Length: 116
Image: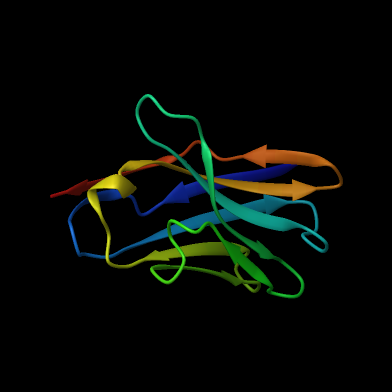
């Protein structure tokens, strides 16, 4: 089992920044991919960014590339999503997930609202 708790969401003006955190606990994270997704009202959940826990390789959706940065702190088992140049269309609930041995674990989500 992997437990995930997101934090750091809130209300920010367009052009501003936020940093989301995802605190992970449970089994070893070797071989785990940690991801951020988001779901806007009335839309399906979509992929935002991923990072491989052991190697640190990252990937991003085209909609956030160049604005968002995913990182991890292996000492504290925490994954971050630094979000810069936020736009109104970034408004969504942001979810952290962990892929381990064919199972995806989800956090409860944190709301991000960007006012224009």
